[in-house]
Picture 1 (tube, rainbow over the protein chains, first blue to last red):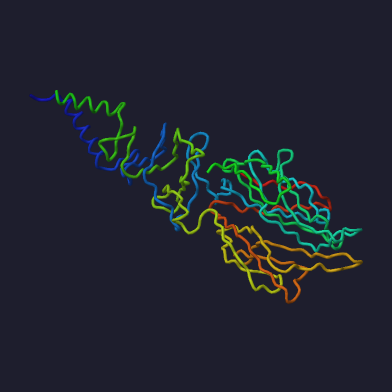
Picture 2 (cartoon, rainbow over the protein chains, first blue to last red; picture 1 turned 60 degrees about the vertical axis):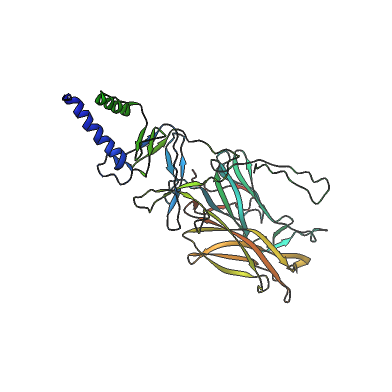
Length: 210
Length: 208
């Protein structure tokens, strides 16, 4: 008994398909697939995706991190592209001629909702003397540089308390190096107040779940 | 009859069944036993979110010098020499007075950004100097990294005062080495405050 012609055609298509899918590489939009599946175009997975085996990044590999954007597409953080994002930013602030050595409130204008800014080092470049006056000259001075949020932006404060330029005519300069992270990558835990109950030792509860 | 079954198999394969490439027993809607290469954009509708109790996850990276370009790898800091963030402790001894004027750290400026933290000063104190009218000069003590000749350098010293001869000190620091493949070193922002103690930066860096 002879099979109808259309059965034969379907059989042929099925054999071709099964051969291609079982043993050969599959190309979509390309006739020369280089991998088990090569898609010459975009690819969309509506649900989840598991990859059983990622190779480890090697020392010779130049690489960028991958992120998923709010529209579900996977994107890389290309730091070499000036208009692309980075995992973090190192920004140096050169603040010339403050009030002697005192920078009370310097507004960086950086949005505090989207970013976190921390001071990683600071240098003041002018000679200093302790403030004069009765009992003052024996005071100690512990310099500090810190960032804080005010009016929705990051500000900085820098000072040698109880000290100032040795010569009032000196023009001092602070060089403050900051590290800026996007809050997409950084988690801010807020302030933890630790009353020390007049003691010198204590413990601070960790907000991080190990 | 057997041929009719073939036809049914083929039709279901086209419409609603799971597809396997390199496997006859797919366990997902599309199951590829092998590698996948996507030449353009890639979108995943549902990526599960890492929860607070999960550990041992790895960040994914896209390699730009693989063949073909764009291999997705995971970043295991144990298998690569330089991680995105690296910390290295340094201990300086037998210093001339307090003056670490210029130590070439030999880190390539084009590849890394070096920050200094955890500074610790161990040893004799630098003494104040009595100047005009009994005032106490304390000089200015700096701890900072800077670039020179293509590499990062370190300066730690009191630029105006010195340790007394015969006294000694040691410095401890932790250098934080940021890989420029992941972190961007922005152009410095210079602002003049004209003698005021408040002010606004001359520009806001472009961040994303």
